[in-house]
Length: 278
Image (cartoon, rainbow, N blue to C red; front, top):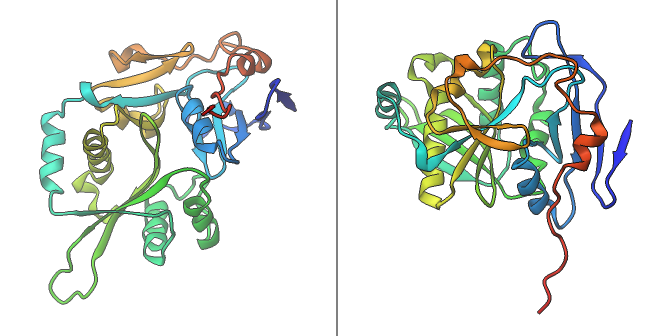
C-alpha cells in the first residue's frame, strides 16, 4: 500500500504486526526513506512531527484503531532534576563520556548483547547479530554520534570498562536519542536515567532546546521512566503539548481515534529544499 505526496518523498505503510507495548493490539507504521542531500532537513522536519529514525528510514506509528503512542521530548529550559535524579548524577559522576563517529565496535556489541539478553530477551532485536548491529549504528545519512560512557580501569585491569552507549542524532533543535543500552549488572546505578540526564546537559551546553526520547505509551511499563522527567512534552493532535499528570492519560484504542492514512500524509509538512539564491 503506497501513498505519494505531490513531491518526494513517498510514504508507505507497514503490514500490521503484534504491538510490543500493549497486549492484544496490532501496530502499523507510516514510513519514508531518508536519503539524498536533503536528508538532514527531512529528518529535522519530520522528527518535529512525531517521526523517529531507524537507519535510513523515518517512521511514525499509524495503527488503524489505536493512537496510544505519543512522541516525547524534554524541553531543556523547563527541566529541573528531582532529588532521585540528582543522586543518579552523583552516583555516576565517575563515568567518562566520549562522543565518537557512528562506528560499531566489538566492545559495543558485547555490551549490547548482554543488555538484550538481560532486559529484552524476547524483544524484536533479540536475534540481532554483529552485522545487523553495525548497520544500526553506521547506516545513518545524517549527523549522528555514538556517545560512550566508561569507567577507568580498576585494579588488575588494563582496559576501560564500557558502561553505557547511546546512538544520538544531532538535529537543528535538539538531540534525538535513537537507541541506548547499558551494563545490566549495574541496574542499581540507574544508567538509563543517567544517559538521559547527561544528554540534557549536552543539549544545554550546545544551546539546543530539546532532547527527543522516542515514544511514550500510557500504561506501558517499558515507557514509564520517560514520564519521570520534568519539562516533558508530547506530540498530540498535530502539536507539542506539555505533559501534565501521567495518570490522566490513557491509551486511546477507539477505531475512530485515527485519521485515514491519506489524511495523515496530506498534513505532513515537508522542508523547503529549494536552493538559496545568491
